[in-house]
Length: 343
Image (cartoon, rainbow, N blue to C red; front, side, top):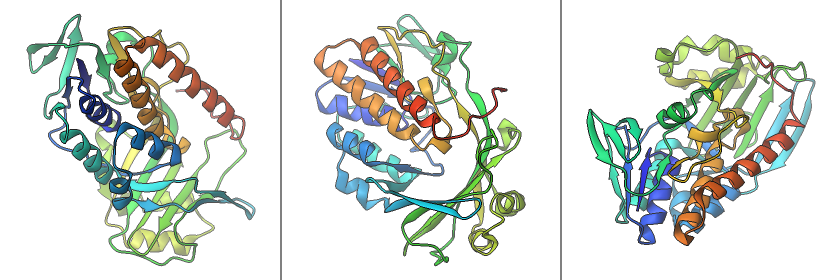
């Protein structure tokens, strides 16, 4: 028996995979329904892992868009293309519907509109009521994890120096760039700061874009959807070399989703416990610029599913995951500028 806090990507797929194998699972999710949000890209490793957990890859492909490669256009005209390696772009709500349908087809007990505000040894608190924790508690409650705040108050999410703006055009466009490539227009690189960028992907059905803007964080209450005109000038400023393409995207976009890029550092993390385990963004969120946050959460779910199904140690499983993630991030950091250390 397992209790999960958080019905996002990791919590939902873990619940479905466990329940499918006969494990009793209860999920408490604070939102009232399947979450909305911006778009994201999953790579081949993420798709392979979801398939091993039992999610239909055909259903995933039906709601996503192929990413044939990553085209990086750097300042000074330096261009390179990286193979797609099985990447596909999802609108978050579409991905969550597939994962939710997967979990709902099992006996998993997923309870929406149930915000967990606290926990102790053996109970969770929901709207002032104490409910029993059955089995280990898996905290998949996101970057602002209540559980992490209780267990490790000295490990908060840290601003990654960039605001990220996501937009989707109202209809398909045909810009002067190659179809089905995820293009990154890098405006500023190599000065020790995070890299400003404008990215876009288009095909015959849709066109989506994003901008990473180095600046102070926006207030918490401003995170979410805004009219595009409020951010248009800031978006143009990060891609001055392709004004016509950027204007075409902006002109056909009504609203944008704006958020602060943040990291949850693994440095100094306390060892995982037997009874309470942090999972996904709750334990190791990373800025969208890295492009691996969702995959890491999915692979956490796989590691926990394997440990629970085989009776193996949950702390050992998550310690191995942390070590793997730390190694991958250290390797990736060798190929990009290091941001300043201030919060």
